[in-house]
Amino acid sequence: MLPTEYAHFDGLALSALLYGKQVSARELMTCAIELARRRGGALNALCYERYDESLELAARAPLQGVFGAVPFVLKDSSLASRRFPYSIGSRLFSDQQAPYDATLVTRFAAAGFIPFARTTSPELCMAPTTEAVRNHGPTVNPWDRTRSAGGSSGGAGVAVATGVVPIAHGSDGGGSIRIPAACCGIYGLKPSRGRVPMGPARGEGWGGLSTDGVLSRTVRDSAAALDAIGGYDPGTPYASPPAPPSFLQLLSQRCERPLRIARWSGAWEGIAVASECVAATEFAAQLMRAAGHEVIDVAPPEIDYWKFIDAHMLVLSASIVVAVNAVTQGRPAREWQHQLEPAMYDGYQLGTSLSAEQYIRAINLFHAVGRCLESHMESVDIVLTPTITQLPAKLGVLTMNDDFRSFRRKVAEYTTFLAVVNASGQPAASVPLYWTDAGLPVGIQLIGHFGREDRILQLSAQLEAAAPRGIRSWAEELASNSTPQRTAK
Image (cartoon, rainbow, N blue to C red):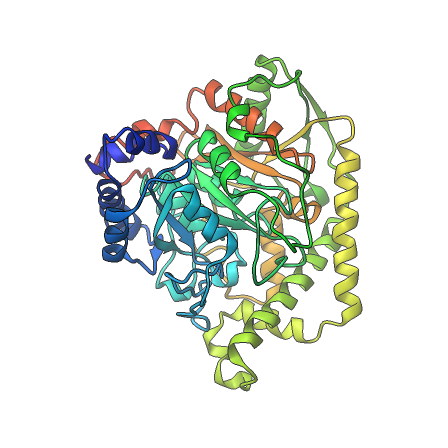
Protein backbone atom coordinates (compact mmCIF):
# COMPACT_ATOMS: atom_id res chain seq x y z
CA MET A 1 0.00 0.00 0.00
CA LEU A 2 1.24 3.48 -0.88
CA PRO A 3 1.03 6.29 1.68
CA THR A 4 -1.39 8.20 -0.54
CA GLU A 5 -3.68 5.16 -0.64
CA TYR A 6 -3.40 4.72 3.11
CA ALA A 7 -4.37 8.36 3.69
CA HIS A 8 -7.58 7.83 1.71
CA PHE A 9 -9.04 5.38 4.27
CA ASP A 10 -10.55 6.02 7.67
CA GLY A 11 -9.73 3.79 10.62
CA LEU A 12 -12.59 1.34 10.16
CA ALA A 13 -11.78 0.91 6.47
CA LEU A 14 -8.15 0.16 7.34
CA SER A 15 -9.34 -2.30 9.96
CA ALA A 16 -11.46 -4.10 7.34
CA LEU A 17 -8.40 -4.41 5.11
CA LEU A 18 -6.39 -5.82 8.00
CA TYR A 19 -9.00 -8.39 8.99
CA GLY A 20 -9.46 -9.29 5.32
CA LYS A 21 -5.71 -9.94 5.04
CA GLN A 22 -5.42 -7.42 2.21
CA VAL A 23 -2.76 -5.43 4.04
CA SER A 24 -0.47 -5.98 7.02
CA ALA A 25 -0.11 -3.91 10.15
CA ARG A 26 3.53 -3.27 9.28
CA GLU A 27 2.53 -1.91 5.88
CA LEU A 28 0.13 0.52 7.53
CA MET A 29 2.73 1.61 10.07
CA THR A 30 5.28 2.14 7.27
CA CYS A 31 2.79 4.43 5.48
CA ALA A 32 1.98 6.33 8.67
CA ILE A 33 5.63 6.90 9.50
CA GLU A 34 6.44 8.11 5.98
CA LEU A 35 3.59 10.61 6.15
CA ALA A 36 4.61 11.58 9.67
CA ARG A 37 8.08 12.45 8.45
CA ARG A 38 6.85 14.28 5.36
CA ARG A 39 3.66 16.00 6.46
CA GLY A 40 3.75 15.92 10.25
CA GLY A 41 7.34 17.11 10.28
CA ALA A 42 6.68 20.00 7.91
CA LEU A 43 3.84 21.23 10.11
CA ASN A 44 5.57 20.52 13.46
CA ALA A 45 2.86 18.16 14.67
CA LEU A 46 4.81 15.32 16.34
CA CYS A 47 7.20 14.66 19.19
CA TYR A 48 8.61 11.65 21.03
CA GLU A 49 8.64 9.61 17.85
CA ARG A 50 9.26 5.87 18.30
CA TYR A 51 9.36 4.83 14.66
CA ASP A 52 11.67 1.79 14.60
CA GLU A 53 10.19 0.36 17.78
CA SER A 54 6.66 0.85 16.45
CA LEU A 55 7.46 -0.88 13.18
CA GLU A 56 8.67 -3.90 15.12
CA LEU A 57 5.54 -3.85 17.29
CA ALA A 58 3.32 -3.65 14.22
CA ALA A 59 5.14 -6.57 12.59
CA ARG A 60 4.19 -8.90 15.42
CA ALA A 61 0.95 -7.28 16.57
CA PRO A 62 -2.14 -9.51 16.75
CA LEU A 63 -5.31 -8.09 15.27
CA GLN A 64 -7.64 -7.09 18.07
CA GLY A 65 -10.61 -4.89 18.78
CA VAL A 66 -12.63 -2.93 16.29
CA PHE A 67 -9.56 -1.27 14.71
CA GLY A 68 -7.32 -4.33 14.38
CA ALA A 69 -3.85 -2.76 14.34
CA VAL A 70 -4.20 0.81 13.08
CA PRO A 71 -1.40 3.41 13.55
CA PHE A 72 -2.19 5.93 16.27
CA VAL A 73 -0.72 8.89 18.15
CA LEU A 74 -1.05 10.01 21.77
CA LYS A 75 -1.24 13.67 22.68
CA ASP A 76 1.71 15.18 24.56
CA SER A 77 -0.48 15.59 27.61
CA SER A 78 0.29 13.85 30.88
CA LEU A 79 -1.62 10.73 29.80
CA ALA A 80 0.59 8.00 31.26
CA SER A 81 2.31 5.59 28.90
CA ARG A 82 5.28 3.36 29.64
CA ARG A 83 6.40 3.65 26.01
CA PHE A 84 6.25 7.41 25.60
CA PRO A 85 7.70 10.17 27.80
CA TYR A 86 5.82 13.46 27.91
CA SER A 87 6.48 17.18 28.31
CA ILE A 88 2.99 18.74 28.23
CA GLY A 89 4.57 21.24 25.82
CA SER A 90 6.84 22.60 28.56
CA ARG A 91 10.61 22.82 28.95
CA LEU A 92 10.10 22.37 32.68
CA PHE A 93 8.35 19.03 32.17
CA SER A 94 10.51 17.65 29.36
CA ASP A 95 10.97 13.89 29.26
CA GLN A 96 8.79 12.95 32.20
CA GLN A 97 8.23 9.20 32.27
CA ALA A 98 5.30 7.34 33.83
CA PRO A 99 6.02 3.83 35.15
CA TYR A 100 2.55 2.59 34.19
CA ASP A 101 -0.09 2.86 31.47
CA ALA A 102 -3.20 4.92 32.07
CA THR A 103 -6.49 3.03 31.87
CA LEU A 104 -7.25 4.87 28.63
CA VAL A 105 -3.93 3.82 27.06
CA THR A 106 -4.80 0.21 27.87
CA ARG A 107 -8.23 0.65 26.27
CA PHE A 108 -6.69 2.23 23.17
CA ALA A 109 -4.47 -0.85 22.80
CA ALA A 110 -7.41 -3.23 23.25
CA ALA A 111 -9.30 -1.28 20.56
CA GLY A 112 -6.52 -2.12 18.09
CA PHE A 113 -4.48 1.10 18.05
CA ILE A 114 -0.67 1.07 17.88
CA PRO A 115 0.81 4.44 18.96
CA PHE A 116 4.07 5.49 17.30
CA ALA A 117 4.51 9.09 18.55
CA ARG A 118 3.01 11.84 20.62
CA THR A 119 1.46 14.99 19.14
CA THR A 120 2.42 18.52 20.04
CA SER A 121 0.54 20.63 22.56
CA PRO A 122 0.91 24.14 24.04
CA GLU A 123 2.45 24.51 27.48
CA LEU A 124 0.41 22.62 30.08
CA CYS A 125 -2.34 22.25 27.44
CA MET A 126 -3.62 25.71 28.34
CA ALA A 127 -3.90 27.50 24.99
CA PRO A 128 -6.21 27.36 21.95
CA THR A 129 -3.15 27.41 19.69
CA THR A 130 -0.06 25.17 19.74
CA GLU A 131 2.92 27.50 19.83
CA ALA A 132 4.97 26.16 22.73
CA VAL A 133 8.57 27.34 23.00
CA ARG A 134 9.46 23.77 23.91
CA ASN A 135 8.36 22.59 20.46
CA HIS A 136 10.89 24.88 18.69
CA GLY A 137 8.22 26.58 16.65
CA PRO A 138 4.45 26.59 16.16
CA THR A 139 2.30 23.74 14.96
CA VAL A 140 0.81 25.25 11.83
CA ASN A 141 -2.48 24.91 10.05
CA PRO A 142 -2.38 22.50 7.08
CA TRP A 143 -4.65 24.80 5.08
CA ASP A 144 -2.78 28.04 5.72
CA ARG A 145 0.68 28.09 7.27
CA THR A 146 0.22 31.62 8.58
CA ARG A 147 -2.47 30.34 10.95
CA SER A 148 -2.67 28.06 13.95
CA ALA A 149 -3.77 24.44 13.86
CA GLY A 150 -5.61 25.09 17.12
CA GLY A 151 -4.95 23.73 20.59
CA SER A 152 -4.39 22.24 22.85
CA SER A 153 -4.67 19.07 20.72
CA GLY A 154 -3.12 20.95 17.82
CA GLY A 155 -0.64 18.30 16.75
CA ALA A 156 -3.39 15.69 16.84
CA GLY A 157 -5.55 17.85 14.59
CA VAL A 158 -2.77 18.15 12.03
CA ALA A 159 -1.93 14.44 12.16
CA VAL A 160 -5.53 13.50 11.40
CA ALA A 161 -6.20 16.24 8.88
CA THR A 162 -3.13 15.43 6.78
CA GLY A 163 -3.71 11.68 6.80
CA VAL A 164 -0.80 10.67 9.03
CA VAL A 165 -3.39 8.78 11.09
CA PRO A 166 -7.13 8.44 10.59
CA ILE A 167 -7.83 8.99 14.28
CA ALA A 168 -5.83 10.42 17.19
CA HIS A 169 -6.01 10.88 20.94
CA GLY A 170 -7.01 14.32 22.21
CA SER A 171 -8.15 15.89 25.45
CA ASP A 172 -10.50 18.77 26.16
CA GLY A 173 -10.61 20.99 29.26
CA GLY A 174 -11.91 24.13 27.59
CA GLY A 175 -12.32 23.21 23.94
CA SER A 176 -9.03 21.45 23.23
CA ILE A 177 -10.55 18.74 21.02
CA ARG A 178 -13.11 20.98 19.34
CA ILE A 179 -10.77 23.92 18.56
CA PRO A 180 -8.23 21.96 16.46
CA ALA A 181 -11.09 20.06 14.84
CA ALA A 182 -12.56 23.38 13.71
CA CYS A 183 -9.19 24.79 12.63
CA CYS A 184 -8.10 21.69 10.71
CA GLY A 185 -11.39 20.66 9.10
CA ILE A 186 -11.96 17.38 10.93
CA TYR A 187 -14.40 15.90 13.45
CA GLY A 188 -13.90 16.26 17.19
CA LEU A 189 -16.22 14.94 19.90
CA LYS A 190 -15.86 15.90 23.57
CA PRO A 191 -17.59 13.10 25.50
CA SER A 192 -19.76 13.56 28.58
CA ARG A 193 -17.97 13.87 31.89
CA GLY A 194 -17.25 10.38 33.21
CA ARG A 195 -17.71 8.61 29.86
CA VAL A 196 -13.97 8.09 29.26
CA PRO A 197 -11.70 6.86 32.10
CA MET A 198 -9.05 9.07 33.69
CA GLY A 199 -7.54 6.44 36.02
CA PRO A 200 -5.78 4.91 37.66
CA ALA A 201 -3.81 7.81 39.15
CA ARG A 202 -6.50 10.50 39.09
CA GLY A 203 -10.24 10.87 38.97
CA GLU A 204 -10.62 14.30 37.42
CA GLY A 205 -8.69 17.07 35.70
CA TRP A 206 -9.10 20.79 36.19
CA GLY A 207 -11.94 20.49 38.69
CA GLY A 208 -13.94 18.14 36.47
CA LEU A 209 -13.56 20.26 33.32
CA SER A 210 -11.22 17.96 31.43
CA THR A 211 -11.95 14.76 29.54
CA ASP A 212 -10.11 12.65 26.98
CA GLY A 213 -11.37 11.56 23.58
CA VAL A 214 -10.35 11.40 19.93
CA LEU A 215 -10.25 13.46 16.75
CA SER A 216 -11.08 11.75 13.46
CA ARG A 217 -11.79 12.30 9.79
CA THR A 218 -15.13 10.50 9.88
CA VAL A 219 -17.96 10.42 12.38
CA ARG A 220 -18.09 6.64 12.34
CA ASP A 221 -14.47 6.37 13.54
CA SER A 222 -15.28 8.56 16.54
CA ALA A 223 -18.38 6.48 17.29
CA ALA A 224 -16.42 3.23 17.10
CA ALA A 225 -13.66 4.64 19.28
CA LEU A 226 -16.15 5.78 21.91
CA ASP A 227 -17.63 2.28 21.97
CA ALA A 228 -14.14 0.91 22.60
CA ILE A 229 -12.77 3.36 25.19
CA GLY A 230 -15.92 4.46 26.98
CA GLY A 231 -17.30 2.87 30.10
CA TYR A 232 -17.14 3.12 33.85
CA ASP A 233 -13.74 3.04 35.51
CA PRO A 234 -14.07 1.55 39.04
CA GLY A 235 -13.43 4.13 41.72
CA THR A 236 -13.91 7.15 39.50
CA PRO A 237 -15.71 10.13 41.13
CA TYR A 238 -17.92 10.67 38.06
CA ALA A 239 -20.09 8.43 35.92
CA SER A 240 -22.03 9.31 32.80
CA PRO A 241 -25.42 7.73 32.05
CA PRO A 242 -25.26 4.22 30.52
CA ALA A 243 -24.25 4.17 26.87
CA PRO A 244 -26.31 2.43 24.18
CA PRO A 245 -25.09 -1.03 23.12
CA SER A 246 -23.19 0.57 20.24
CA PHE A 247 -22.79 4.20 19.19
CA LEU A 248 -21.49 2.95 15.85
CA GLN A 249 -24.59 0.89 15.09
CA LEU A 250 -26.80 3.89 15.87
CA LEU A 251 -25.29 5.79 12.94
CA SER A 252 -27.12 3.55 10.49
CA GLN A 253 -30.45 4.28 12.19
CA ARG A 254 -32.64 7.32 11.83
CA CYS A 255 -33.12 9.58 14.83
CA GLU A 256 -36.05 8.37 16.96
CA ARG A 257 -37.92 11.50 15.83
CA PRO A 258 -37.14 14.86 14.22
CA LEU A 259 -34.89 16.80 16.58
CA ARG A 260 -35.57 20.24 17.99
CA ILE A 261 -32.39 22.28 17.70
CA ALA A 262 -31.70 25.69 19.22
CA ARG A 263 -29.26 27.96 17.42
CA TRP A 264 -27.71 30.59 19.67
CA SER A 265 -28.21 33.96 18.03
CA GLY A 266 -25.20 35.69 19.59
CA ALA A 267 -22.45 35.52 22.19
CA TRP A 268 -22.27 36.68 25.79
CA GLU A 269 -21.04 40.18 26.63
CA GLY A 270 -21.37 41.28 23.01
CA ILE A 271 -18.30 39.28 21.99
CA ALA A 272 -17.90 39.53 18.23
CA VAL A 273 -18.50 36.49 16.03
CA ALA A 274 -16.97 36.47 12.54
CA SER A 275 -19.42 36.56 9.65
CA GLU A 276 -17.98 33.29 8.31
CA CYS A 277 -18.76 31.56 11.62
CA VAL A 278 -22.33 32.85 11.55
CA ALA A 279 -22.65 31.71 7.94
CA ALA A 280 -21.46 28.24 8.96
CA THR A 281 -24.27 27.90 11.50
CA GLU A 282 -26.80 29.08 8.92
CA PHE A 283 -25.50 26.49 6.46
CA ALA A 284 -25.78 23.79 9.14
CA ALA A 285 -29.30 24.94 10.00
CA GLN A 286 -30.34 24.62 6.35
CA LEU A 287 -29.00 21.06 6.22
CA MET A 288 -30.80 20.20 9.44
CA ARG A 289 -34.11 21.59 8.23
CA ALA A 290 -33.71 19.70 4.94
CA ALA A 291 -33.29 16.52 7.01
CA GLY A 292 -36.61 17.20 8.75
CA HIS A 293 -35.38 18.73 12.00
CA GLU A 294 -36.70 21.92 13.57
CA VAL A 295 -34.20 24.75 14.13
CA ILE A 296 -35.11 27.77 16.24
CA ASP A 297 -33.07 30.87 17.06
CA VAL A 298 -32.73 31.63 20.76
CA ALA A 299 -30.54 33.80 22.94
CA PRO A 300 -27.82 32.01 24.93
CA PRO A 301 -28.72 31.28 28.57
CA GLU A 302 -28.18 34.05 31.08
CA ILE A 303 -24.68 33.43 32.40
CA ASP A 304 -22.30 36.00 33.88
CA TYR A 305 -19.67 35.06 31.35
CA TRP A 306 -16.74 37.05 32.71
CA LYS A 307 -17.43 35.79 36.21
CA PHE A 308 -17.31 32.26 34.80
CA ILE A 309 -14.03 33.02 33.01
CA ASP A 310 -12.54 34.35 36.26
CA ALA A 311 -13.52 31.08 37.97
CA HIS A 312 -12.05 29.12 35.08
CA MET A 313 -8.78 31.05 35.43
CA LEU A 314 -8.59 30.32 39.16
CA VAL A 315 -9.01 26.58 38.68
CA LEU A 316 -6.43 26.54 35.90
CA SER A 317 -3.98 28.48 38.05
CA ALA A 318 -4.47 26.01 40.91
CA SER A 319 -3.78 23.18 38.48
CA ILE A 320 -0.55 24.87 37.36
CA VAL A 321 0.62 24.99 40.97
CA VAL A 322 -0.09 21.29 41.55
CA ALA A 323 1.68 20.26 38.34
CA VAL A 324 4.70 22.54 38.78
CA ASN A 325 5.24 21.71 42.45
CA ALA A 326 5.17 18.01 41.66
CA VAL A 327 8.09 18.33 39.25
CA THR A 328 10.12 21.04 41.01
CA GLN A 329 9.84 19.32 44.41
CA GLY A 330 10.44 22.35 46.58
CA ARG A 331 13.24 23.98 44.59
CA PRO A 332 13.16 27.79 44.69
CA ALA A 333 11.41 29.46 41.75
CA ARG A 334 14.56 31.28 40.64
CA GLU A 335 15.98 27.90 39.56
CA TRP A 336 13.16 26.97 37.20
CA GLN A 337 10.84 29.90 36.43
CA HIS A 338 12.71 30.65 33.16
CA GLN A 339 11.57 27.22 31.93
CA LEU A 340 7.94 28.32 31.98
CA GLU A 341 6.48 30.73 29.45
CA PRO A 342 5.46 34.12 30.93
CA ALA A 343 1.72 33.49 31.13
CA MET A 344 2.24 30.11 32.81
CA TYR A 345 4.64 31.44 35.42
CA ASP A 346 2.24 34.31 36.13
CA GLY A 347 -0.55 31.73 36.41
CA TYR A 348 1.58 29.79 38.88
CA GLN A 349 1.99 32.90 41.02
CA LEU A 350 -1.76 33.53 40.87
CA GLY A 351 -2.40 29.95 41.95
CA THR A 352 -0.12 30.20 44.98
CA SER A 353 -2.20 33.14 46.23
CA LEU A 354 -5.52 31.33 45.72
CA SER A 355 -7.56 30.61 48.86
CA ALA A 356 -9.53 27.44 49.54
CA GLU A 357 -12.70 29.55 49.59
CA GLN A 358 -11.99 30.93 46.11
CA TYR A 359 -11.41 27.45 44.73
CA ILE A 360 -14.62 26.03 46.19
CA ARG A 361 -16.63 29.01 44.95
CA ALA A 362 -15.20 28.47 41.46
CA ILE A 363 -16.23 24.80 41.46
CA ASN A 364 -19.70 25.74 42.71
CA LEU A 365 -19.99 28.27 39.88
CA PHE A 366 -19.12 25.54 37.36
CA HIS A 367 -21.93 23.41 38.76
CA ALA A 368 -24.33 26.36 38.55
CA VAL A 369 -23.40 26.86 34.89
CA GLY A 370 -24.15 23.18 34.28
CA ARG A 371 -27.60 23.49 35.80
CA CYS A 372 -28.23 26.65 33.79
CA LEU A 373 -27.31 24.98 30.49
CA GLU A 374 -29.40 21.87 31.11
CA SER A 375 -32.35 24.02 32.18
CA HIS A 376 -31.92 26.13 29.05
CA MET A 377 -32.09 22.97 26.93
CA GLU A 378 -35.21 21.47 28.55
CA SER A 379 -37.33 22.02 25.44
CA VAL A 380 -34.65 21.19 22.83
CA ASP A 381 -32.46 18.20 21.96
CA ILE A 382 -29.35 19.93 20.61
CA VAL A 383 -27.79 23.41 20.68
CA LEU A 384 -26.04 24.72 17.55
CA THR A 385 -23.24 27.31 17.82
CA PRO A 386 -20.08 28.24 15.96
CA THR A 387 -17.18 26.23 17.35
CA ILE A 388 -14.87 29.24 17.67
CA THR A 389 -15.82 32.87 17.21
CA GLN A 390 -13.22 33.67 14.54
CA LEU A 391 -11.36 31.98 11.72
CA PRO A 392 -8.27 30.01 12.84
CA ALA A 393 -6.03 32.43 14.71
CA LYS A 394 -3.01 33.92 13.02
CA LEU A 395 0.27 32.67 14.46
CA GLY A 396 1.65 34.93 17.17
CA VAL A 397 -1.71 36.39 18.21
CA LEU A 398 -2.49 34.05 21.12
CA THR A 399 0.95 33.27 22.51
CA MET A 400 1.83 33.07 26.20
CA ASN A 401 4.00 36.21 26.15
CA ASP A 402 1.51 37.95 28.41
CA ASP A 403 0.24 37.92 31.96
CA PHE A 404 -2.08 35.04 32.75
CA ARG A 405 -5.31 37.04 33.15
CA SER A 406 -4.84 39.00 29.92
CA PHE A 407 -3.97 35.83 28.04
CA ARG A 408 -6.99 33.94 29.34
CA ARG A 409 -9.32 36.84 28.51
CA LYS A 410 -8.11 36.82 24.91
CA VAL A 411 -8.69 33.06 24.82
CA ALA A 412 -12.19 33.55 26.23
CA GLU A 413 -13.15 35.83 23.35
CA TYR A 414 -11.93 33.25 20.81
CA THR A 415 -13.46 30.15 22.44
CA THR A 416 -16.61 31.70 23.89
CA PHE A 417 -18.95 28.76 23.27
CA LEU A 418 -16.66 25.98 24.50
CA ALA A 419 -15.51 26.05 28.15
CA VAL A 420 -19.06 26.42 29.45
CA VAL A 421 -19.73 22.93 28.11
CA ASN A 422 -16.74 21.62 30.05
CA ALA A 423 -18.25 23.15 33.17
CA SER A 424 -21.57 21.42 32.50
CA GLY A 425 -19.98 18.10 31.56
CA GLN A 426 -22.24 17.79 28.52
CA PRO A 427 -21.06 16.20 25.27
CA ALA A 428 -20.28 18.46 22.32
CA ALA A 429 -18.75 18.05 18.88
CA SER A 430 -17.17 20.27 16.26
CA VAL A 431 -18.33 19.34 12.75
CA PRO A 432 -16.52 20.72 9.64
CA LEU A 433 -19.31 21.59 7.26
CA TYR A 434 -18.35 24.99 5.91
CA TRP A 435 -15.34 26.37 4.04
CA THR A 436 -14.42 29.95 3.16
CA ASP A 437 -13.65 31.02 -0.39
CA ALA A 438 -9.98 31.06 0.62
CA GLY A 439 -10.17 27.39 1.61
CA LEU A 440 -10.28 27.65 5.39
CA PRO A 441 -12.49 25.24 7.37
CA VAL A 442 -15.10 26.68 9.72
CA GLY A 443 -16.49 24.35 12.38
CA ILE A 444 -19.95 24.31 13.91
CA GLN A 445 -20.58 22.96 17.40
CA LEU A 446 -23.36 20.62 18.49
CA ILE A 447 -24.09 20.50 22.23
CA GLY A 448 -26.15 17.63 23.62
CA HIS A 449 -27.79 16.76 26.92
CA PHE A 450 -25.58 15.05 29.47
CA GLY A 451 -24.95 11.48 28.39
CA ARG A 452 -26.57 11.92 24.96
CA GLU A 453 -23.60 11.45 22.64
CA ASP A 454 -25.95 9.26 20.61
CA ARG A 455 -27.96 12.23 19.36
CA ILE A 456 -24.82 14.24 18.55
CA LEU A 457 -23.28 11.36 16.63
CA GLN A 458 -26.46 10.59 14.70
CA LEU A 459 -26.96 14.21 13.71
CA SER A 460 -23.26 14.55 12.86
CA ALA A 461 -23.49 11.55 10.55
CA GLN A 462 -26.51 13.05 8.82
CA LEU A 463 -24.65 16.31 8.30
CA GLU A 464 -21.55 14.50 7.11
CA ALA A 465 -23.57 12.71 4.44
CA ALA A 466 -25.50 15.82 3.42
CA ALA A 467 -22.66 18.35 3.18
CA PRO A 468 -21.35 18.74 -0.37
CA ARG A 469 -17.96 19.56 1.08
CA GLY A 470 -17.23 18.60 4.65
CA ILE A 471 -15.35 15.87 6.45
CA ARG A 472 -15.20 13.56 3.45
CA SER A 473 -13.54 16.14 1.25
CA TRP A 474 -10.23 15.07 2.77
CA ALA A 475 -10.29 11.85 0.76
CA GLU A 476 -9.92 13.90 -2.41
CA GLU A 477 -7.55 16.48 -0.91
CA LEU A 478 -5.14 13.79 0.24
CA ALA A 479 -4.94 12.02 -3.11
CA SER A 480 -1.80 14.01 -4.01
CA ASN A 481 1.67 13.48 -2.55
CA SER A 482 2.02 17.06 -1.34
CA THR A 483 0.96 18.41 2.02
CA PRO A 484 -2.52 19.96 1.65
CA GLN A 485 -2.21 23.72 1.91
CA ARG A 486 -4.00 26.83 0.85
CA THR A 487 -3.09 30.40 1.63
CA ALA A 488 -5.93 32.53 2.89
CA LYS A 489 -6.61 35.73 1.03
